[in-house]
Image 1: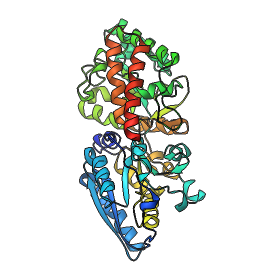
Image 2 (image 1 turned 90 degrees about the horizontal axis):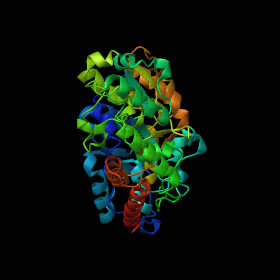
Image 3 (image 1 turned 120 degrees about the vertical axis):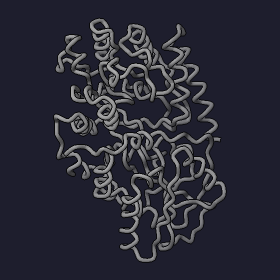
Image 4 (image 1 turned 180 degrees about the vertical axis):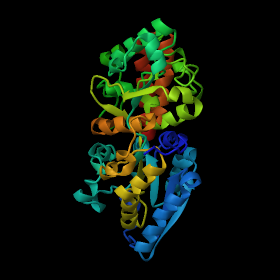
Length: 429
């Protein structure tokens, strides 16, 4: 079965919500002890009503029909406004009851989010992929329930350029070091670059580098190991193995891409999410027909990094927490997630969903389906990035300057650490 032709913007939009500039403290002391078991649950989502209104409304209708006395009031929020809108609600005390957030933003809200542990049994949580549940625990508190995500990164390559470079599909890269050598070979034989990517935070994590301390209050990425990784990337960038345009701040307008024939492939990384193949099929069908799909490259840690996962949270000041928590189980249940993944090029947080037709009835000859198959193999090895957009942007500012300049990697990492520690202190304040 072909993966759905839903706009690829959904997968990136759901994973790129801006970070909160500060946090707001919530406390059980400020929460009413008079918890309701019926009434209205105010439910916030991010940019879903336009394309998926019928689906979400169907979930709401089903829940209301099965739970007399409960009404779900749905509010769909533009993606760029979700954090600010929630911050304002928390400050006013007039809070929603269920809110969609990206996992990297959870820590920004301090203790304003409920610990959901009392509402779920071990059996409830066993439905979810363990690594994704771990990603939404803060200091042993379950502050969210994992939902959908864009998947782990796969790789895909233009076989026409591979033929020109004398590279067989069996010899495509499996590690970042092999990716650099691949890019150099492509550059020497064809003049094209290998791939457009940056040594993002996820790359450091894939190399086994811990970028934050355990409680995520201090940066820890300024290490000799991280500097060595960056030095390899600058050498590959200068050699043309990594595309020159990879340093562009606007990823929508990269000058060298697989689609325009100036890059030989996508090796993984942020561009390797399967939903991005929809753009290639639409914009460059001739290239799309000549793609070979592989697993994404790995770093020394042997894992795959998911850029972010969507979650649902319950604010601490909600007075209908038990119903809110139960509604979250309804929305994130295996069958509900399967239905969504049949509508959109996304991946679930529940293992049972992976047994559905959207993930089993696939055609290896189609690049989108082949990429889904690669990601399914990778899911047992995933970790989540858990880095906010603010931290990633501060990091990439220095990395772009490093790749195009002559400064030492340790100096770039020191600047990143200073910027991160300032941002983290602001969030904790």
